[in-house]
Image 1 (cartoon, rainbow, N blue to C red):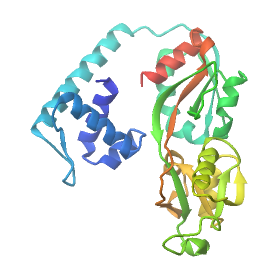
Image 2: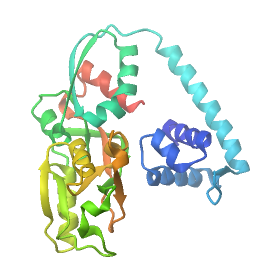
Image 3: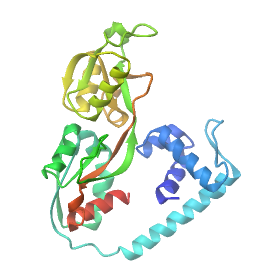
Image 4: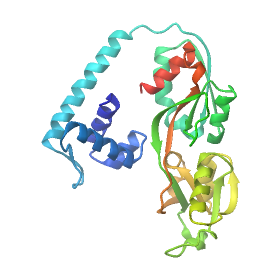
Length: 292
């Protein structure tokens, strides 16, 4: 069992709500539920009674909570004892990510990195998430925070940090998209606002293809954040990662649609050229990220 599992369990204990705990952990409720099920399987017993609201820890769950707290305190004590010296590592390192990742993932990562490596000049670039993998392939960025592509290019190493469901979203005022005003909408007529390229677009295309349909594309944009804004304006239906929607200032003006089959979630993590992972600066940021 990993230390991250123990931290996830303690977060669940503090909220006693699967959705709120998942939000704090930057993962989907389904991912947290699977992680809890795995912990219960390893422990050999039920830790949380899921039939009540709020959730209730079983007697075994209470004992496991105390075990998790004691284990993490011991781990933190050990890390503090062996990592008291601030590193004198210095130089320049570039990192590329989407705007959403810069808001939701970078603050904690950069805080920990700065505490350990204050002399490293870290240059942050933000932009379209679809450009992340090309940036690291071309060495325009040393490390990127990105969604894992379906086929990872040879020579790259990816390490997942969190996951995010891929959601269909529509304007809060459904009257602006009359094609949705039916039990089984004709998706070939629904105006879509989609990424011009990237993993989300690929999965949307696969979803329509599986239904034998061609999407009616009303707008193509660069960046998932712009999709949420256009959907909020009533342009059409969009597809974005939950992480983007959660951090959008206009999230209250859109609604999530229930579609079948659901799209495969994004795995979001750090990616770098495999041959460069032993470079001191890249190794420092990489280890900081995956130790979070």
